[in-house]
Image (cartoon, rainbow, N blue to C red):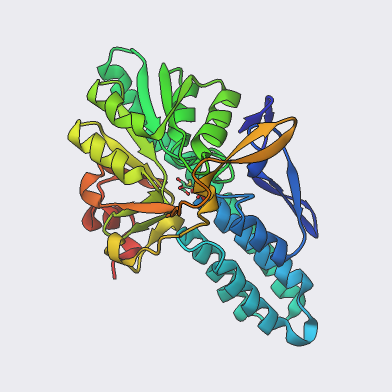
Length: 366
Ligand code: MRU
């Protein structure tokens, strides 16, 4: 998608030894491009959230495996790669795309003996994970577009008001985004729409990144405090909620950015359709109970106690709470399937239950 009218992706290859990312910590104020030349740098970029969002975490990890393969000592190649996989997987626990991408690379490398071929394969897999995400997001956009079209028709072409939480946009993926792909497709199709953007404390991915994306694409939007959504829904100011996912069980429970569950409850109480957009790589086919089985990341309490902003061309942090007050920072929550109207996947829209999900993914019916 565009920045200053120029097409961009969230990750790309600069040359054979350098992967480039947009360091999202300085968005929307400054476009910072960062070089990744080792698995250590890739792991740091994921852990410290220079990049974030489930599909982009997966693609960055796959490129991390390639960088590891490039630098691995010939006499101890496999041990180095195994350690790299372990280090990458430990960076962020909730987004299952991370394990998906690392395991895909590891499994392929373990079947090969020649080092040159291992390196080529790691690169091929990183490219595959990346392109797969782009294509899946594009398809999610086309399937989600139909939902927005239906609402627009029912409203006789009046503005369709959507609400989204966090950033499940192209900067969380590689291109298009998951939750935002239907929005971009609908805007392109000429549908009159407007997006309520939850600021998404504590890291403000909505206020900083989703708002930036929508502004750059010329899509009408309004940034709101996280607690406004319920009020808007009670007053019929939201027609549709679309969010992303970091991990979805085979039964349709969804882990997404903290606060998603409360939006789902408010939507349920007010008969507002609540959809989750996700690619296949975000399903965890091994688990059934999201509340019991999805690991929830706990991040530093500093992210809650301090607030970050841009001043004099620099990022600044200021203390918000009494210095002595403890804070806790769970990064994600689980929305049980019963509150979800449907899942928008690259294969189509289904209900959030095992039968409906498996009808789209019959090969997972084991
Ligand atoms: O902590 P983050 O910024 O990585 O969390 C991102 C989200 O919660 C997104 O909604 C999710 O990864 C889906 S991205 C398409």
